Length: 414
Ligand SMILES: NC(=O)c1ccc[n+]([C@@H]2O[C@H](COP(=O)([O-])OP(=O)(O)OC[C@H]3O[C@@H](n4cnc5c(N)ncnc54)[C@H](O)[C@@H]3O)[C@@H](O)[C@H]2O)c1
Image (cartoon, rainbow, N blue to C red; front, side, top):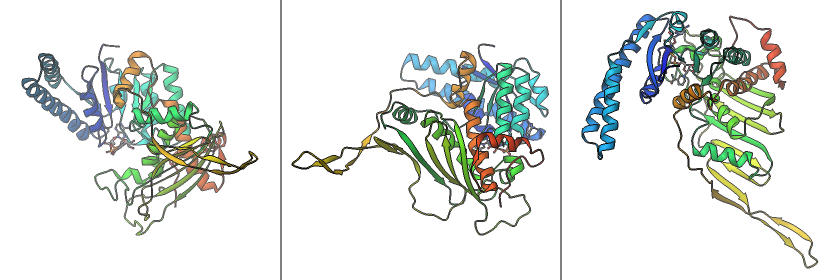
């Protein structure tokens, strides 16, 4: 691998812009060399935007260098400006067929920014071509697709990371995980996570987004796959990455006013899931694009035998027993005290930097394919359980998924 990673972007729609900005923050580590979209015009526009954004950043760095407070900062900014200026003159190759792009030897890794229905086939081709993959969320439409993606990348010895919104990064997440896994909360037996939008359906309430978000055959699911995915990923990390064992879900579609337009709209609007993990922990997730509920406390709540965590607050019991004259414990008086979580002092890489470093150092991306597979077991399992109206095991989920085939690999609801 070259000193700097050569990057190709596949899928040049809305979210690819965020990837472009992320890579430009990391020009010492990566350079975008090619873009691909089945719609040529979209790929061309993204290539132009990369060049324009690089030029803008070169100018900003040069201006900042003139005003730098110290000679060291000035030199750093001048080097960055020169590098960006050089990149802005480099060619960005444009493709409409990702296999042609994957044949470029100078590409080390791809950013996969297509809708979920294309994540598995493209990841498999990229792995076979020896390219690392940084995949957008949700990793896939089903747990089986996620498993196949992991197997393909492991077989080829390339890294598979996915965009989980940085939910595993940062001091707060590290602190909570540490409290849970070190035993400081005692036996952590249960947790609950809640996040709702009032009306937040991409493509309907948020019209700049594509309509595929509403179609289960393209996205896999609705609100649970679009926003629940971040929360499930975060919870798994905070709880020490337990393996899901059984899943029981309910899914609702039908909030009023009903959509009666021409586009396919067959996905969950609200999902509640109860998960039992192999280590005995249990967790309830509630996520949705739509709610008529107001002023409800949302967030993450973790229950342990010695204490609890409510979002960023530690709650510990400092209660005492009433002791009678004979020395018998008569009554326990709990006293729940809110405390500030102890935060580790740490610097946090960006999501993309974490992925690039894992590729170069042969490390594990913080959100790696195997983590995404567990997330997909919960997402896909919740919708299958909702359809069956009963709890399912994870192994049952894989057996049932294996019986299904295109064109409906997602889970239509409603
Ligand atoms: N839009 C957001 O704010 C957002 C935020 C976080 C994550 N995501 C995730 O990013 C991914 C993409 O979402 P988006 O909003 O950018 O979608 P989008 O519809 O704006 O863009 C997707 C692009 O992929 C292209 N494409 C489809 N199949 C392809 C193929 N086989 N080869 C090459 N190009 C192909 C499409 O032509 C389209 O231009 C999804 O997984 C989504 O969940 C989106």
